[in-house]
Length: 178
Image (tube, rainbow, N blue to C red; front, side, top):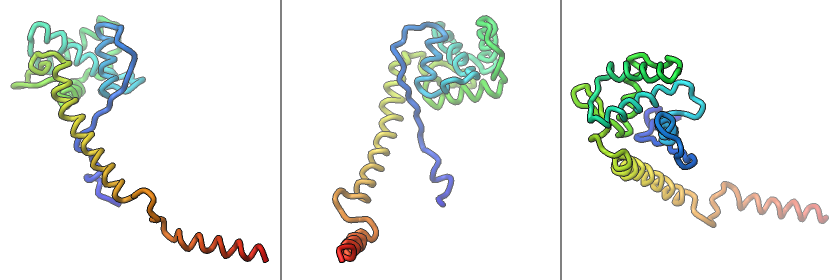
C-alpha cells in the first residue's frame, strides 16, 4: 500500500454546472458557492455563503474587514434573514475565510480580508482559477492519460496467459468432437 502523503492532492477543484443565474443577492452567492465546490448540495451549514456575501458587500465600499467584524456581520445577516445561527464560531469563520482565500477569491493583509484586489470576480476567476489552477490540474490529468496509454497500448496482447487460454480452448473443442 502506498504512502498516504502520496495520495494527497496538490490542488483540488470542484466545479458544478447549474441553470443560468436568475436569482439575486444571497441566493446568487449561494449558487456560486455550490458551483465552485465551497458548499455541497444539501448542506445546512452554509455559513461560507454569508462570509463571502459580507465580503462582497464590503467590496462595494472598498472596505477591508477583520475576521471578528466578518463574524459579527454574518450574525447580523443570518439574523435578518431568519436563518439559524449554525457555524458562526470564530474558528469556523476563519476556516471559511481560508477556503475562500485558497480559491483566490479573497486576500488578506495584516489580518484584514477583502475580495481580491477589490476587483471583478469574473477576472479573478479567469486569471487565478481558470488559467492557473484548472490548467495545472488538466495538464496533470493529461500526463496520467499519456502514461496510461503507454502502459496499456491498443491492440497488444498484454493479458497474462492469453495465448495459453486460446490453446486450451482449442484443445477442449477438439476433445468434445471425439
